[in-house]
Amino acid sequence: MTTTITAACTECDAPITFDRPPLNGQVVRCADCGAELEVTNTDPIRLELAPEVEEDWGE
View 1: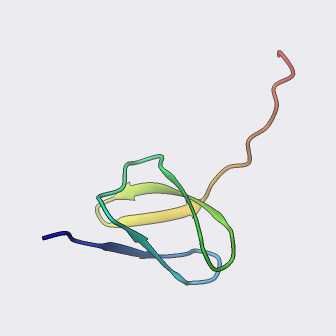
View 2: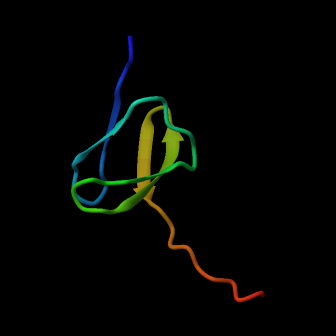
């Protein structure tokens, strides 16, 4: 028996489904609005906008 875990997109409130338990720091993309979301808590599931990846230019 597989359990589907669902959370809501923080941008558009669309359902985000996970086929297996997500991991802290995992990044997912919302199929409706395209927002990149990061799992910041797994119990209960909490999603936040993923930080933008910045170039460090060797600094």
